[in-house]
Length: 411
Image (cartoon, rainbow, N blue to C red; front, top):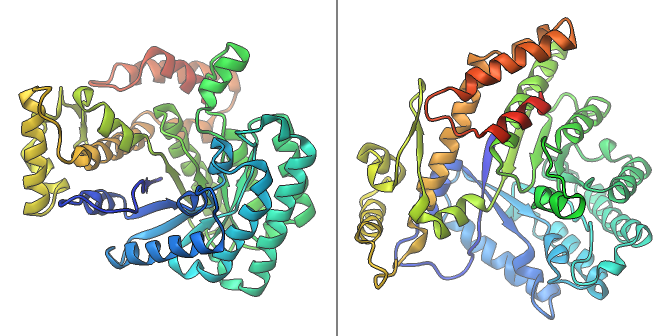
């Protein structure tokens, strides 16, 4: 499982740019087309200007960094693109797909799950109409540019019955798995909060689990099993979800090995690591996994210097980090951070180490093995509870009681 860094700034950089330190850890970056379509009068000209920015951005990247392009559909959800401009958004996206696809390694299909500034327009008829138009144009571009098959991810929406029904119908009508081999699951940003608001009940499981299996099923029943199954989860950071994703990846790998198919790849993205470093630096407690145990530091001042030098790998980055840390340690409200993103690479490192720890936990407590070898559900359920209690007792465990309950439901 890999984390995809979310780029939030294509504009002017500070004197010291910490983005290379983040990308050196992740080797992947997600850039949204929202920067080319959220203007009041967006169109082919603004998307071309965005493409030029991507080109310039790419020139400064290490050659092993992979670029993912998000479709910009989130700008409709947020209300930056209103209902009357939906067709223009579809045309603009597909123009980028047709003429600028050389700028990226992967790109997500344009999905429109709702209109944020006009909820009344979010009818089944409109969802079907516009998403059918979006997919029709995209598949026509794909038909004339077969190399895009390696790059395209089909985005599933499923957060409510109407969305799922529309996407299922479109998937069937277009026979998507005959044309697109990579899959993504959307609609997860804020889904736990929405559930609490709409039903007064908090989601106590990872909602993408069944959809992940559906995507894998469609892969197995498509013509591309000689190529790796790729699944991306858009906008998740919950630690329960990340543990679940690792477990799903292991299960998919197991099934693929049985059939002698290539090893699958599961990825996820979130802006949360960036925002957490920016706006919660006073409460940041970084983690380091040393392949034996998970170490939790009380604050950024406690982190071993060897770790800092690894993350901030050249003297300029290291000195800029130290400057930011010194201002943090002064606790002087009159002193502002010159470059408040200085903690973003450290927070990404911390979360990547938590993911490594989760991977080790799955092995240590035989989560995967017990699923494969289970002879009865009741016996498996009883053993799982014993295992979860052991896991909760691990030193510096990041899990709360509510997390353990969710993991139990996931298992």
